[in-house]
Image (cartoon, rainbow over all chains, first blue to last red; front, side, top):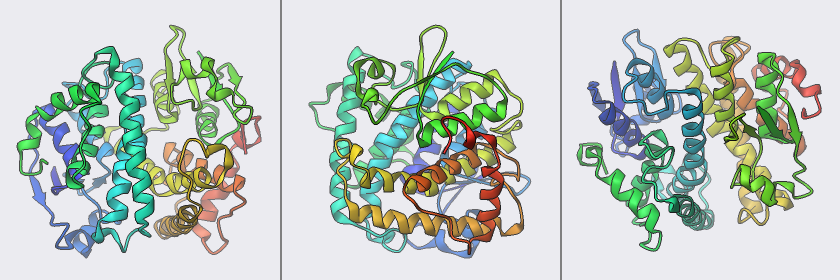
Length: 206
Length: 206
């Protein structure tokens, strides 16, 4: 296997997953800012021109972070990051979807509508980005209420892809110079726990 | 088990999944337009006030369509709609994510920004909805190019959650009086195949 990756939010998610699994996959850095993701060589790996992409030994290319993570979970089941019983897996999936739709999507929209490199891919509306900043903060506050039961991690109080999905949003926020406010004490507790993960210190970290 | 559901895009996805599995789950209809999803009884099932929600026999509530579908896949593996090998599952997941992010998200944004009942949940921007109509059509055209190899179904040419995810967008488009243009002949072939599924004729169909 070979992982095409970069210093960006979705690659960070896969990196965090790989780190926690304790596995080692050869990586190839692709330079987004230099336009390498729009070159023919990369479009052959992923016609959407995005990262990360996992290349299997038979030449198959798997893109989309969660698809890559699920494939690795099947190969390396321990420690389980998707849940090891149908019920645990359903609860982790529910929270992963919530983090995706409420947190990561809002954060991603801020970047997509404000960062010049995305201008040819999206019809950028700075006013929409402002609504997404407010939506993101509203959703973190919602999560804060839910974490007020004292748990550290988002789903089942165990580190999972739900946390990793929300970590992608922390990466975006860092890039956009946004922070979780101190008033969201329960989210801050979660943030401290996930920021202690060594993935942030690696070459693709935040 | 008991499924709380409605006549809406995400419930349609779970219905399509259940239909294909050939399983029978007791359902409770919740009236979105009458505000029942914002009542305390429903918020206790899903604090986000959304549908569908699967109630397990032990009282656990699973929301988020894909989480419900994955739980049902674990209980009823055949026919597999998520892929039965790690590689097939990864390819189906990749396509499900693409359909989610390119097709269902754009379609959903059109509804969220134009339908009055969502005005208290989102900062509605009709101009943004217009950009999403264009984005949706651009993404269908992208899919059309990819389906030009002649396959009927989106991932591995077998009916899967990738197709079901895109079917959710067909539901939204029907509601918004939008259609797939005839010029997208390959998507039209796919549409004919999925519209032949009997789920569309049921009480929660489109």
